[in-house]
Image (cartoon, rainbow over all chains, first blue to last red; front, side, top):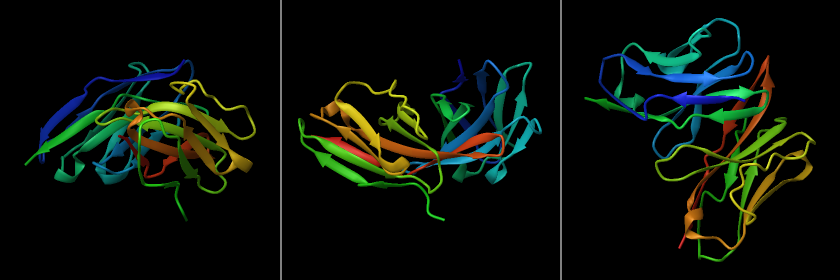
Length: 111
Length: 115
């Protein structure tokens, strides 16, 4: 069975400092993994996805995620937080066309 | 091209009434999903349609909830005898096979308020 665990329900960073949002997955085979972002009162937007090509995936808005099979992790990072990054972030694992969402991490950016 | 659309964007209904929520997926997407998101919460999976296969209804919270997908395209989520705990944003998504994996695209949601 597939599942994801987002290790932090809330992360707070200062503007200009690095962002790390943690995600661990469980999958019975080589997974496809995604990060989605949801800004307040907005829909979900795909940030990036991993599908067994390069283990370091670059997404929109300067975000990256690294797939580490040995650690079953897919953490989301950004070198320098911007105020506009404040949002809810969801880590997702897919089993063909079925998707399994984590519980989300709320990112606050302090000016 | 057009994204996933949902209607209405907002719906206020009285407890006990039935409501229908509509989702128009992206043309050509084979899979369609309904989720529920309560205030400040994550996504709760409700139901999933893939092509002509029987839908996965494992997430429907009660028999008051049902959904259909006509002609492999438009879907309607119906909630009968609405309760206050049904108040939430209902999100629809569709997906297609992009290379070796499916990609899921979300609509803007329908905000349901049961008074």
